[in-house]
Length: 175
Image (tube, rainbow, N blue to C red):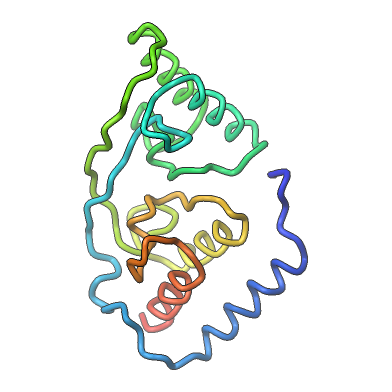
Protein backbone atom coordinates (compact mmCIF):
# COMPACT_ATOMS: atom_id res chain seq x y z
CA UNK A 1 0.00 0.00 0.00
CA UNK A 2 2.69 2.51 0.95
CA UNK A 3 6.38 2.21 0.18
CA UNK A 4 7.06 2.13 3.91
CA UNK A 5 5.33 -1.11 4.83
CA UNK A 6 5.12 -2.14 8.44
CA UNK A 7 7.93 -4.50 9.25
CA UNK A 8 7.35 -7.72 11.14
CA UNK A 9 9.24 -6.19 14.09
CA UNK A 10 6.96 -3.13 14.07
CA UNK A 11 3.85 -5.30 14.09
CA UNK A 12 5.29 -7.52 16.83
CA UNK A 13 6.15 -4.48 18.93
CA UNK A 14 2.69 -3.03 18.40
CA UNK A 15 1.04 -6.33 19.35
CA UNK A 16 3.20 -6.56 22.48
CA UNK A 17 2.32 -3.01 23.42
CA UNK A 18 -1.41 -3.61 22.97
CA UNK A 19 -1.22 -6.85 24.97
CA UNK A 20 0.62 -5.10 27.78
CA UNK A 21 -1.87 -2.23 27.76
CA UNK A 22 -4.79 -4.63 28.07
CA UNK A 23 -3.44 -6.00 31.34
CA UNK A 24 -2.44 -2.66 32.81
CA UNK A 25 -4.52 -1.43 35.69
CA UNK A 26 -2.93 2.00 35.82
CA UNK A 27 -5.16 4.95 36.59
CA UNK A 28 -5.88 6.97 33.51
CA UNK A 29 -5.34 10.72 33.29
CA UNK A 30 -8.26 10.78 30.90
CA UNK A 31 -11.68 11.33 32.36
CA UNK A 32 -13.90 8.56 30.98
CA UNK A 33 -16.68 11.07 30.33
CA UNK A 34 -14.46 13.08 27.98
CA UNK A 35 -13.97 10.36 25.37
CA UNK A 36 -16.94 10.43 23.04
CA UNK A 37 -17.69 14.07 23.75
CA UNK A 38 -17.80 16.68 21.02
CA UNK A 39 -14.82 19.04 20.74
CA UNK A 40 -13.77 21.85 18.40
CA UNK A 41 -10.92 21.04 15.99
CA UNK A 42 -9.02 23.16 13.48
CA UNK A 43 -9.40 22.07 9.86
CA UNK A 44 -7.46 23.56 6.92
CA UNK A 45 -9.17 22.00 3.92
CA UNK A 46 -6.76 21.51 1.04
CA UNK A 47 -3.56 22.23 2.97
CA UNK A 48 -2.23 18.73 2.34
CA UNK A 49 1.35 19.52 3.41
CA UNK A 50 0.31 21.55 6.49
CA UNK A 51 2.40 24.60 5.61
CA UNK A 52 -0.44 27.12 6.04
CA UNK A 53 -0.83 27.80 2.30
CA UNK A 54 -2.80 26.42 -0.65
CA UNK A 55 -0.47 25.92 -3.59
CA UNK A 56 0.91 23.43 -6.11
CA UNK A 57 2.77 21.58 -3.36
CA UNK A 58 -0.60 20.58 -1.89
CA UNK A 59 -1.67 19.20 -5.27
CA UNK A 60 1.47 17.05 -5.42
CA UNK A 61 0.93 15.70 -1.90
CA UNK A 62 -2.74 14.94 -2.60
CA UNK A 63 -1.82 13.15 -5.84
CA UNK A 64 0.78 11.00 -4.04
CA UNK A 65 -1.71 10.11 -1.31
CA UNK A 66 -4.33 9.20 -3.93
CA UNK A 67 -1.81 7.04 -5.79
CA UNK A 68 -0.82 5.33 -2.55
CA UNK A 69 2.84 6.35 -2.79
CA UNK A 70 2.75 8.12 0.57
CA UNK A 71 0.60 8.02 3.70
CA UNK A 72 -1.63 11.04 4.37
CA UNK A 73 0.39 13.67 6.28
CA UNK A 74 -2.77 15.41 7.56
CA UNK A 75 -6.25 14.34 8.63
CA UNK A 76 -8.93 13.13 6.25
CA UNK A 77 -10.88 16.34 6.86
CA UNK A 78 -7.96 18.47 5.68
CA UNK A 79 -7.82 16.47 2.43
CA UNK A 80 -11.61 16.55 1.89
CA UNK A 81 -11.67 19.82 -0.07
CA UNK A 82 -15.21 19.41 -1.44
CA UNK A 83 -16.61 18.39 2.00
CA UNK A 84 -18.37 15.23 0.82
CA UNK A 85 -16.91 13.09 3.62
CA UNK A 86 -14.42 11.20 1.41
CA UNK A 87 -10.96 11.93 0.08
CA UNK A 88 -10.83 11.08 -3.61
CA UNK A 89 -10.01 12.51 -7.05
CA UNK A 90 -12.92 14.96 -6.76
CA UNK A 91 -11.01 16.70 -3.95
CA UNK A 92 -7.97 17.04 -6.20
CA UNK A 93 -10.19 18.63 -8.84
CA UNK A 94 -11.78 20.94 -6.24
CA UNK A 95 -8.35 22.13 -5.08
CA UNK A 96 -7.25 22.64 -8.68
CA UNK A 97 -10.38 24.76 -9.29
CA UNK A 98 -9.72 26.76 -6.09
CA UNK A 99 -6.15 27.47 -7.18
CA UNK A 100 -7.33 28.42 -10.70
CA UNK A 101 -9.82 30.93 -9.23
CA UNK A 102 -6.89 32.58 -7.43
CA UNK A 103 -4.77 32.66 -10.58
CA UNK A 104 -2.59 29.83 -9.24
CA UNK A 105 -1.12 32.23 -6.68
CA UNK A 106 -0.08 30.85 -3.32
CA UNK A 107 -2.84 31.59 -0.79
CA UNK A 108 -2.62 31.69 2.99
CA UNK A 109 -5.29 29.46 4.52
CA UNK A 110 -6.90 30.07 7.88
CA UNK A 111 -8.18 26.91 9.55
CA UNK A 112 -11.86 26.79 10.41
CA UNK A 113 -13.36 25.27 13.53
CA UNK A 114 -15.40 22.12 13.14
CA UNK A 115 -16.78 19.57 15.59
CA UNK A 116 -15.15 16.18 16.16
CA UNK A 117 -15.59 13.36 18.65
CA UNK A 118 -12.76 12.91 21.14
CA UNK A 119 -11.25 9.44 20.60
CA UNK A 120 -12.83 8.91 17.17
CA UNK A 121 -9.59 8.06 15.32
CA UNK A 122 -11.28 6.94 12.10
CA UNK A 123 -13.53 10.06 12.06
CA UNK A 124 -16.74 8.08 11.50
CA UNK A 125 -18.75 9.91 14.16
CA UNK A 126 -18.48 7.46 17.07
CA UNK A 127 -15.87 5.86 19.33
CA UNK A 128 -15.66 2.12 18.62
CA UNK A 129 -13.02 -0.64 18.87
CA UNK A 130 -12.10 0.13 15.25
CA UNK A 131 -10.70 3.46 16.46
CA UNK A 132 -8.06 1.63 18.52
CA UNK A 133 -6.88 -0.21 15.41
CA UNK A 134 -7.04 2.92 13.23
CA UNK A 135 -4.92 4.86 15.70
CA UNK A 136 -2.48 1.94 16.19
CA UNK A 137 -1.97 1.61 12.44
CA UNK A 138 -1.47 5.35 11.95
CA UNK A 139 1.13 5.48 14.73
CA UNK A 140 2.97 2.37 13.51
CA UNK A 141 2.95 3.57 9.89
CA UNK A 142 4.06 7.09 10.78
CA UNK A 143 0.93 8.53 9.17
CA UNK A 144 -1.70 10.95 10.40
CA UNK A 145 -4.92 9.37 11.66
CA UNK A 146 -8.08 10.08 9.67
CA UNK A 147 -9.35 12.33 12.46
CA UNK A 148 -7.87 15.73 13.28
CA UNK A 149 -4.96 15.45 15.75
CA UNK A 150 -6.88 17.27 18.49
CA UNK A 151 -9.46 14.47 18.49
CA UNK A 152 -6.90 11.75 19.22
CA UNK A 153 -4.31 13.59 21.33
CA UNK A 154 -6.03 12.22 24.42
CA UNK A 155 -3.33 13.18 26.92
CA UNK A 156 -3.10 16.66 25.39
CA UNK A 157 0.69 16.70 25.11
CA UNK A 158 0.67 18.04 21.53
CA UNK A 159 1.64 14.68 19.98
CA UNK A 160 -0.33 11.69 18.73
CA UNK A 161 1.63 8.71 19.98
CA UNK A 162 1.51 5.39 21.83
CA UNK A 163 0.42 7.12 25.05
CA UNK A 164 -2.77 8.31 23.33
CA UNK A 165 -3.26 4.79 22.00
CA UNK A 166 -2.93 3.41 25.52
CA UNK A 167 -5.55 5.84 26.85
CA UNK A 168 -7.96 5.02 24.02
CA UNK A 169 -7.46 1.28 24.53
CA UNK A 170 -8.00 1.53 28.28
CA UNK A 171 -11.12 3.63 27.75
CA UNK A 172 -12.44 1.13 25.20
CA UNK A 173 -11.81 -1.82 27.54
CA UNK A 174 -13.80 -0.10 30.27
CA UNK A 175 -16.84 0.56 28.10
